[in-house]
Length: 359
Image 1 (cartoon, rainbow, N blue to C red):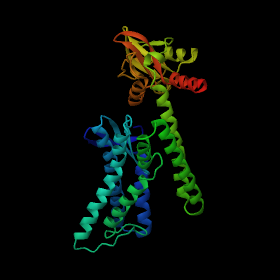
Image 2 (cartoon, rainbow, N blue to C red):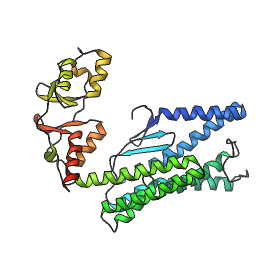
Image 3 (cartoon, rainbow, N blue to C red):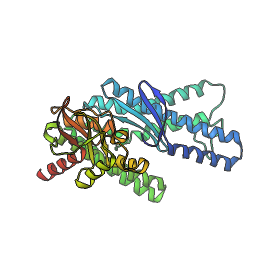
Image 4 (cartoon, rainbow, N blue to C red):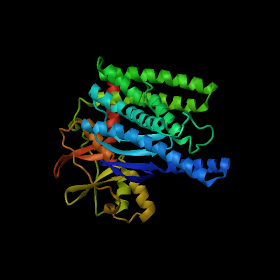
């Protein structure tokens, strides 16, 4: 993911840390220094944050490894200051499978809390359960982690998207209702709860306002995404293929691509070399290439490679997953070197707009 640094890979799933997470560590360290002036306390506070986010990573792996059992691939897991995000290709369509994937994350937190509680219970050291009041001390580390894992599980079980509870609620509804209808009900409940968070936040804690806004927007986005997928399930790539498009040549200069950009409404282009599609050149890459190398650089030096040719009979939803995974706005359609057209993300959006008006 952009602006993220790799922490490694486990079971084929890469783990990244967003650069803003480093700002969190700096802020925690600075706050601990202001309050205590003790380097041991600074290291302890930073260690607590690292341990906390290790719990977050384990939570996300709970989702990812359970999803793998049902054939769903997780591209990566990224840590942000507000939590973690596992990027899955999709959620299982089976309500039972979605239920198991969604509940796996909170169950990991419950398991961590149970292990911590068992250790504290049988330890000769006397631990007092509760959260630290100002900054975490060595005695408060385990009790605070125990409590935070319990709170993490409970918070994620709130029946609102994008929390796990929203997906659990949707999965339970889908066992009796059509999936789109179940998604809409779950989204409505989530938005109702989000309004409650905002109202409570106005009187008690401003952070609840931001959480409420985030939940409200996410719930609406989830419902919209479900309607989009429902519309696209009926179509294959052949239904949306564009036959009018501009082909660039890999050995041409960037100035040629810039002229094509200005002479048409196209923003992204396929690139060929000796009759075969070898890459994609987007508007953003053109501007970056122009800034870095100038307009005389060859297209083949700045284009995106690793282009997959989509067969016409492929479902549009499967094609969209490939485009998202590769981060490409267009892909060629055809068989081998036989090019039939192009699938363009902007054209898909226009198609959906027409479908909405035609209803």
